[in-house]
Amino acid sequence: MSSSKPRTKEEIKKTNDALRADWRYGHFRDGDHDLLFRFSEYPADIPCDHDHCIGCMKKISLVDPPPAEQEGYVSSGYWSGKRLDQNRWLCKQCFLDYRELMNWGEMDESGWVEIDC
Image 1 (cartoon, one colour):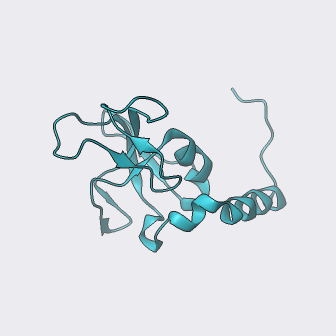
Image 2 (cartoon, rainbow, N blue to C red):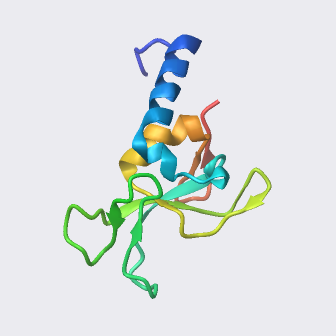
């Protein structure tokens, strides 16, 4: 159980303003809000050997050495009535940093969706 107290509206606004000012925010498209992601290892059986995080542009790949990441968050399925492409990748840090501001949900391996209310 978390012992941290809930953030105030002012704290949330300050965090969101800082995230919007971050250089990574400029890489997101209008359609990147309200997406559903699942955590996954980068697939070895696709024609492309890597993708890039849509936020920071970090390489996500099984064949490239660090600092490339071998796993990340990939868009999946339907969310908010939109059909999503399957190749929108996020590194772990960008997903954690922008999850709340961008209203991203996370699907676990069983297919259950985790949404913070």
